[in-house]
Image 1: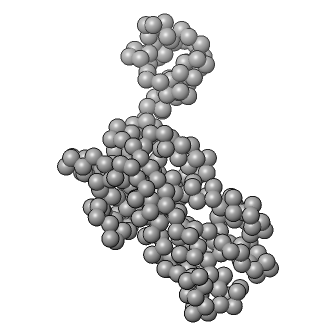
Image 2: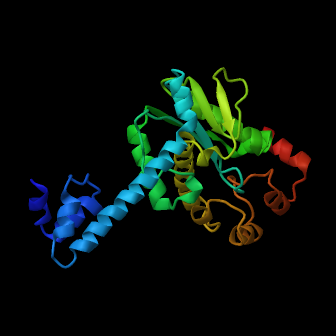
Image 3: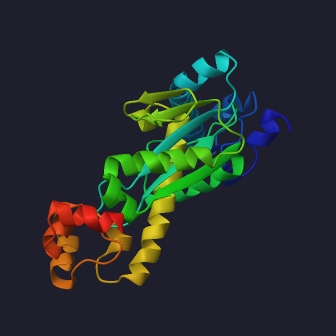
Length: 275
C-alpha cells in the first residue's frame, strides 16, 4: 500500500499500527500525514515522531548496557553470563541468585536494574528473558547457611550455585560487585553492574522475581509478618510482628532484630547454624 493510501486509513488504525504497536513507519507516510487535512492527523504524526525519539533513546541505552559484553564478544568470547543475587538485607527467607547467558542479538526493551522496575514490568521481562536466553539458572542459599556462613558468603554460595546450573557452561562471568572464589571461569566484578550491564540486569530481574514468588509462598505458610508485601525486609510492620509473634523457622537467627527477639547471643546463633 502506497503512503498516500495508508494515510487515508482511519486515524485510529494508524495510531494502533505505528504508535501503540510500534510497527516500522513506511517511507513517505509522515509526509502524507503532514498533507492530511483531517482533524487529528497532526496528533497521530506527532505521536509517531515521539515514539521514534523514545525508541532512539532506548536503543542508545541498550547499546550502552552492552559495553562489557561487546568487549568480550569482540575477543571471541561467546557465552557471557550475567550473575546477580536478591535478598541480602531481609530478615527472613533465603538469598536467591540468578545467572543467564543472552544471545548477542537480544535487545529486551526496558531491561534495567530490577530495583528500578515495578513488579508487573519485572514479571513481563522475566518471562521474556527466560524465553530468549541461551541458558538461565537460579541458585539459593538457605536460612541455615546464612546463619552459619554469614550473609555475605551465603550470597557468594548462591551465585556459585546459579552459575553451576547453567548449560552450556559460560566462558566468562559478569557479576554485580562480587567475585566467586574457587570457580575456574574468568570473571569481572562490576560495581553497580545491574545498572551497567545488560546480562547482569537480566540476572537481577530473574533473581528478584524468583525470590518474590518464594516469599509469597512463605507468607502463606507463615502469615502475619507481611512476607509477601515487603519480602522480609525489616519494616516497622515486620519488626512489630516479630515482637508480637516471635520468629519463624524462615527468620535469619544471625540478624540483630531476630536475635534480639529470641534472646540469642552470637555463640548461640553460630551453634544454631551448625544444626
